[in-house]
Length: 329
Image (tube, rainbow, N blue to C red):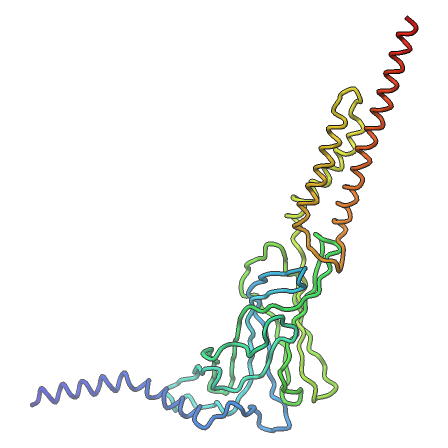
């Protein structure tokens, strides 16, 4: 009987050890979320807006499409605000200072990207958690791939620079309900994009004259194209062919290779226009490089006609000279 009591006592102790923290957290969750309404804006006075600190973490630049005038970014938002309804004393809950709650169970600012090219919807997903501290500080970090409109200018391709803008606003909460506080943009990784380099990132908060208007934050990305690929595959061949095109006039007429070299250069320029498929295809602006290729291709035509005229004159002159010499003999 004594052994049985000892076994029961040990089991009770083990149960208390493992179930204690779990019971404390369960009590804490019930206390924090019990009676909590995620539809009520966290503010002490209804007449005051809820300050939301809005930051961005740029993970990578995925793509910039000049034809579709769009940019695709892999980024994460970092939103922080104060919710007095989600406070507790850590001393009452075994020193627990931080919990995680599914985003659908907490109040969230109704933000979205105004210039998105995809279907507009809520950021994050239902199972994404928000971090809640005992002081009522809430941290929400939704992330994803975002395709935005971006007006590009390829006039100076491949040495062009682009400025893309991301506009963040709310679905319907006016400035009197939510006030944005812009935070600096962070770079999560140093993974470079093969074609573009991010030069600078700046943020700008729209000053509201009418508090019934929607608050907006503008994020500007200054991008610079990496031109090495285009220099090697487009610019250098153009320069070399232009030099060869000039050297055609130095080939002796009697060599018999003058016309053949002209045709070769002309075909090379034609093939270069085929290679220009790697150039941005748009009718909004015409790159100077495209104008240069078209002009050189057009100029290579006269370089073929000129040697033909020279050879014709040379041939007639040679025949006339040979005839004269024979008549004198």
